[in-house]
Length: 544
Image (cartoon, rainbow, N blue to C red; front, side, top):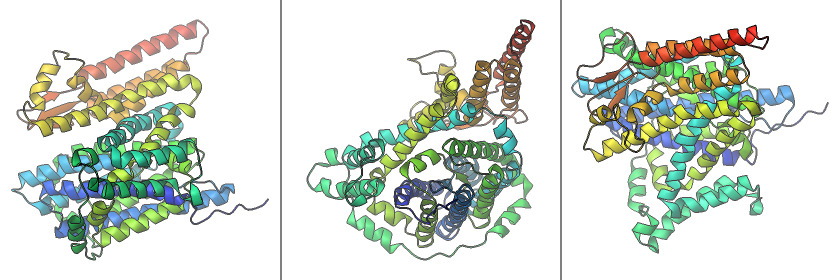
């Protein structure tokens, strides 16, 4: 048998790199902005000396591992079309740890940015340990979960948080984003080869950047959007400096000696760790559906180790196997895009040039690539599951769409001021204004990764007339709802929604909703499905 060559870097890896790098760059910019609400400014030694270098080391570690893993798979199966798992900063964890861990610590400690940072490190470490432990049981979960249940969750995230989000950005600044979108549509939908064999992603980003820098000279700002600033580029360049990674384990151990400070935040850290395990598991399933079957245990373990390394070197933010493997595979990326992303992220984080790049290349220039990836993920959920399971995929989309809707709604409340979320919730629980059921939206959003999977799994087993298995999944869903891992919430401070666990007392003055009623509803599901299984077994039909 002839051995197929698997290159270190393929031509289409450049397209994959642009998509993954832009995604990672957005997360890094989010870190810079959001750390400011914890008292960690953009030039703070905590940010430039610990957080960004720590994030860079963790990203490099994971990117290199998953590239090496792709090479091993290619060699074992004698294939040249293997695509490495995409990897980077975990966006949900980034947002949750900032607003539900670091900000409360900062506010409750008379503005101690260092204590907020330490608590973020501990949260990141906890997430990594949970994911590492989860790697030993995740494969069993994957074998016993319908593919529709795993992929519908990713599709719901892709529709709202990737495709819809970036589609809105395209039309928000059309003269910068629409020309790159046209290039991506031609290259990846029509599969047209560009002149000189240039990668479509590279050309898209280049044209978008040129539009951003040139069109404001010829068109009013109301049409072309805000002009790029040479002064801003010079200022960002002047702030660039080299920062070596520093070990931060001592900071974590110092905080561990104060259990009264961190024990209460386990109610945030534990569910986020579980969410990360399930999310990574779903992405591994997505890769297998696209043709690349990676070992579940080592893939999840590497992700957990990457997050632990991030915490030990000063980053508060977990890493994850990214959603979107089918998209990068469709781009033609192999393993080189992963390695290149790790190298470039390290370079910009250690040199402090994250802000400089954002001043030169507008985000809108590259969002078309990420939009395309979101579309491919959504399509995959329907294409690679059994045809009869399509309704199960569809029902699994609802909680994720509700989660995106709540994210947008909450942002609008915060930006507009006026009535608080708490006031509007009190109205929404008793009335329906043009379908604006905010209470129902939040109930579906809390723990939506689990809810998507439960609903889709129940539907898939019912389609297969496996009534007893559907009843078992309903019982598991009831347990999650009763514990507060799904559906329960509390609102306090006017505009913050938090988990509310069974063992947890609501914050004084909070509007609290415990999901006992929903748990009972799931148990009624289980009872009905069990009765149906019994009845059909009596009729001589399958009911197991």
